[in-house]
Length: 227
Image (cartoon, rainbow, N blue to C red):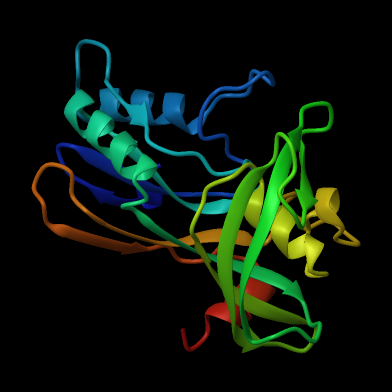
């Protein structure tokens, strides 16, 4: 567990989540990172009572990368507000097919969650029950069969990056739900929460964390070379 911790102080814990790990419990009943981390901290720090740990934001189970947990209630309430105010800048990397598209583009769509299949339906115009979804992508590397996008989120909608990129013909590698032709070996998708930038909610220092891409994946390794 220690090797997944990229930043820790008295208030925050930032993890590099592996594809397939749950950030918090769900209906599957599988153990979540939240519970694993509580147990890890309890043993590591020899804490006699319960460990406080609050989830600040979520990323999808098949996605890898940065997740923030709060170790104090003060940090949790402040970070939650910062998320609402869009004061935490999140940058993602996504591996997509090598299709001809603009090098950089701001995408504006309207997303509606289909509860039955846990999928986002994408509309190009305002639609009843759909929420505005905005992101900007830039192609930062081109490989033989794929290209690497850097994605900056302006909004945080359900499956937003996956759905919006699929809508323009760029389904994320391994993402069968949104049109990829085949799955990845690890069962995850090639979407990685790469960087977080924000002002520490308590100390006020500037925090900038970058997460290494998944190891033992040759396409990810090729993407990270020289970056």
